[in-house]
Length: 162
Image (tube, rainbow, N blue to C red; front, side, top):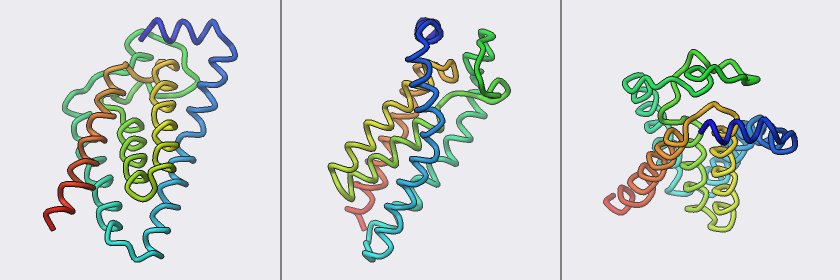
């Protein structure tokens, strides 16, 4: 993780790109989630209840996991300079990686092409958080795995059962 951070610090263009991705990820994923939710609502899609409840439940579980694991962020652990005040919160699993992944996989249920684009954005979000010293690689991977598992169970398996 430190290699990525140190590399980004020495490459101003890369650092700027990571900062742009970081700053845009929350508004972009929020807009995607809301837009897709509205689309499902107006289409009266049976997928809408899953689309709303699965991410909410998984986010609550993830918040509890972070409080159990209590892993410090790399910026706090190694004293890294970041333009953000994350040093007092826990990092594992990554909420951003989890939410980005579950939103991307939810979008794939609606439209595969759009979902693939959102999936690429989810991957870029995770990479940016590693390069900026906000998360360890394993925080991001675990967030992606939890989001992917929740999507599989909540968007595929449970709807098949009901």
